[in-house]
Length: 469
Image (cartoon, rainbow, N blue to C red):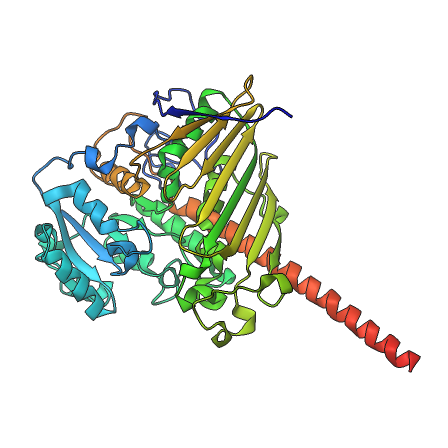
């Protein structure tokens, strides 16, 4: 076998002008607003020219002198950052909108926490965005005390997923937003929900309500906005390729996960739904719609010999056995196109750094994305050359790109077909959520079948022993 070497190159961006042959969700027409339904705009492209994804420190603030009012729902890490990861929506909004940003309300039932993070902002150079911000426990409280000048142009939802994605009172933030602020733009964190599977249909009902309202809605699957991911899309489109298989792997560093709820399936819905959702989403982005009935999965669980973990930082004994998370989940499925998808999530690594990869294969081509969360690297093998070419993407920030594109669409900055795109609509996010639930359920069915077979074998063994006696 010939040895394989990797050729390094800097990324040379070229404009993608070929029409798209596939997008991540093909069941309904969409537009650049990401509504999920036709609304008079030209059909959205499934990708963005990578050269348009400008680093945060190279961009300029959105022009204009009028205030851009925003409501933040949730005062936790996703909104204001932490040492655990690069997420920090407020930071990206400050850079995108500059002095125009006015956070008119911060909504969180944990008033003390919200007040504390707000004070930190007011003690910094971005005080102009927060000096008039008021804290409320609920959206309804804000509405009751809102003046006309406080009406938001956009609402960012970063509250825990168990409080959204349903029609149930107290867990229906999307419906509340549309009730009080019809047509106002919404940015929703992922996953759209973590409730029981029986509520999935409610999420699709919300998707239709958002679409019918005409609101510009984007869901935070930020990996779609990586330059590396858009380079992969560009290669597929320019070479008129048909994806044959997607292979995704997500290995988390469990030692650094100290939140008890994460280890409890009844609260977080499990690692595939809560964490692996990003890679299930990327798989769909390249492979297209999934034949949900074809999903098959197996798991390695906490009570199996190979499932022992030595550095769990929480007391797992306080979690009911049936709610403890699997250590490994491996799934396969068929796409509607005929292509095959596979995904494996592991709770195996210690330390802090995760290990994540996505491979997309087509006739003659292999596209392999490595380390997308920290320093993305793309390895590409093409026909006529057994060697892989390596692309690097320094200073890329997909969190900023998704926020920047969403605001550009709200502001109606551009209307050319290569302009900003909503790459993940609410309906599209529902389909990713549906896939992750299908994987969890398939793995649990497999485990139940395995345990039943083991129990049956044990019973037969005992009966045979009694007969011999």
